[in-house]
Image 1 (cartoon, rainbow, N blue to C red):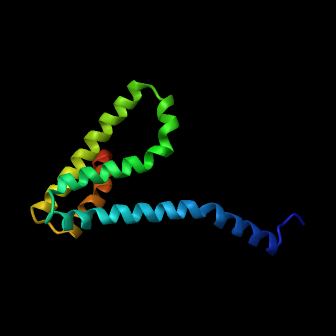
Image 2 (image 1 turned 90 degrees about the vertical axis):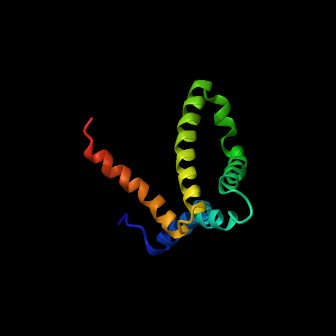
Image 3 (image 1 turned 135 degrees about the vertical axis):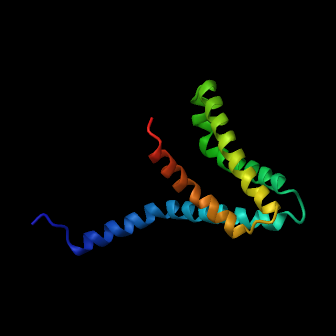
Length: 132
């Protein structure tokens, strides 16, 4: 007789909904900002270089996210920060440069988005074929 009744299930579901709301909003924001990048790059090349727009977009996002990571950044050693900054710079610079230059050269934004979305799958397939 320790089974929860219907009222307890509804209370748990209601509590979980309130707890999960910030996560859902963050996920929706990520989806919106990620998807708008390809369209924004296409629309911006008429007014400014696409790489300049991508640079300023990264600056704005970094400044918006800085308050959430400020305290852990102060507690992390400079060597670890430098290593992760180098990895991030190589990964994002290569990724964004290729995509925005493709859009600048006339590749449709939808095709660029499709190629970008297939990158993780391609990396997983390549890693599966290589034995270390």
